[in-house]
Image 1 (cartoon, rainbow, N blue to C red):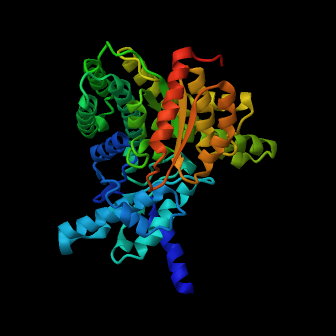
Image 2: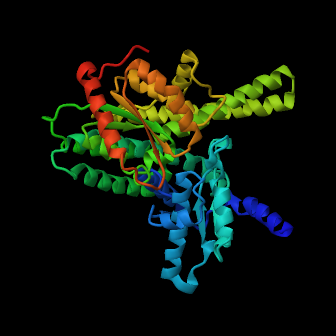
Image 3: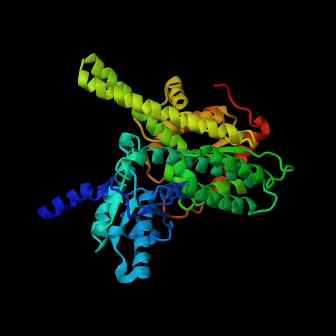
Length: 453
């Protein structure tokens, strides 16, 4: 038993982490459909054979190897990789070699269970003959999602810039869909259009990404937005505006949240979901924040070597965040000149809101840092209701709910918690319908008039 435990612990370090991806097929879980496909296309542009796995097809497998105490996303992603390898074995037979693949599962530090997904999944895969040889590639929030070690060191910097840019473009395609679908002339047109647009962007990132010709891709994006305008019926009046916050996987994974956005649209809403870019910017911002704290402490203790190391980190993360926000602002400025898409929240402003209202602290961490002030930003921006989507028992989102519910009652803005697991709740549609009735009443009396900051 002791030797087995030692072996298991070694597996968590030797077969989970950063591995050179040359000659490997990288398996990307689908979280946000568009974002996942653009990330995979970006990797392919840099010579890495990356593919997005089908999602939720193997949910029964995921549930078989989990207890139910894990987050729902853990069950889904566990099922995705097991289903993929099962089908690959059937297709390839004896030629199937698990060592040819790397399963991509990032991690986060802090109290969220997401940080343990890849460790738990490593233990499960080690228990299945053959899959013990399939490595789990991971990047972490601890170093701001550094990509060092994945590809040739000379290309790492470019890969990170292009990958970030792909996330921004993915967010905009999502926001374009949510902007046009409630007002489409013919049902289904918007979904078909965005699917084709995603495929065009995949080709663009795969073929042009290494050149970092961002202007060319933005030009393509502008063309897509201009075409999207023709899908909308100008005779349909604007609808109540609903903002979504919550746990990043559940709020963006359509199957996991049972297509909540479409349900909100069904009952008369126009929806904006919190972006993936917001989370990436938050990670860079939080690492910068921690580095500044370390620098101040080392200055007080006059640790010269540690001061130098901390200063280097401060400058590195400061430059990274500046670059990210500059790129994001540039893209949104160009696309918003064509169609009024919702802009993203700036992380520094979200922290300022928490401090002004004395609601929470970035010292605690987790997505609650973004969700709580994000809700207030929605209210100030004239949104007519807010939905908090999260896995059942998710700690950060439960904290968000506890803090925000009384605040939203005071502000008289409709608010709805939507926790999810693998079950289908019979009262869910009724709750959404009631919420949308309240949002419509808010819209009827207030329009989209925001509250003072």
